[in-house]
Image 1 (cartoon, rainbow, N blue to C red):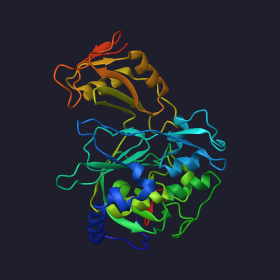
Image 2 (cartoon, rainbow, N blue to C red; image 1 turned 60 degrees about the vertical axis):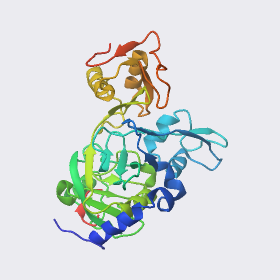
Image 3 (tube, rainbow, N blue to C red; image 1 turned 135 degrees about the vertical axis):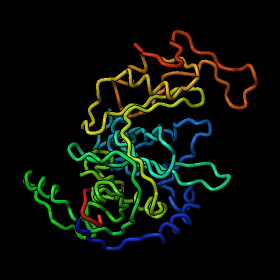
Image 4 (cartoon, one colour; image 1 turned 90 degrees about the vertical axis):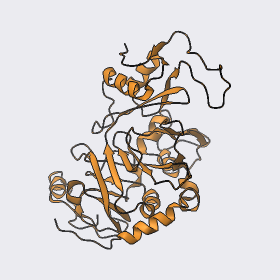
Length: 358
């Protein structure tokens, strides 16, 4: 396919990325992005981050607050269902959702979970360093333009890309009575933003890139590409080497056993227009089995059913390990399972710079 490139960087940017990575927790990501950098749990758990409370100002919108803290559209809405999106009001308490369960795939390179509307980047740790993960909200493909699932890699880094819509995108817009230009030059009106990472998916048509419409980040609105806030892609672009593995998955149900507590996070499926699916308790049971392994866990099934029905994407506590010794606790001080809950172990059942998309 025909390609139009402003500039691209190859191996030199890979070297630069490695050098910049040394300061990723410090100066590189700066104050606004520090909330997106987390140390991976040492006990094998997958829950990262923490929520916080802020108070809105009279001039704030909920989406403006979301962008300030690198949170997506649906994330901020689900965490604040009673707060007005456009006029939260002076002094209104706003919850910043900052807890996420990392998808159960190898913690390497870039992982994008489509239902979660999240990108996770796992920089290779240096010797004696604790592994970290950097996460950002993203916009994946909308219904009919699904972002492909699978393993790919970054093959090129394109600053200030020029976007050439594919024939299918041009045709779709014409049929909707909304014709678009055949070429979008680099600049503020380019839907790809200022930075783009090209993958091998769809013959090089799928990019991880910025946007000129940051208000939609966190919604499924693209033609298959993965969009980030302009400042998030600007932070990610220099530290990701060419050749980085990218694993795009579609896991709406996530669970982890961490510090003796069992957490469950459920999202509407990808391509569902954010409509919760009918709970699949057999699938939830299998995912819980994988999370708890050989441990014995007391599960609150009423809470589990609430989480499954609500499917708001917020990690919630649904059980505790029956006999858990916190790190450093004296022998014989394990906590017992709370009463009136079912103990679970083993199998169980509850009751661009190129022709492409953007």
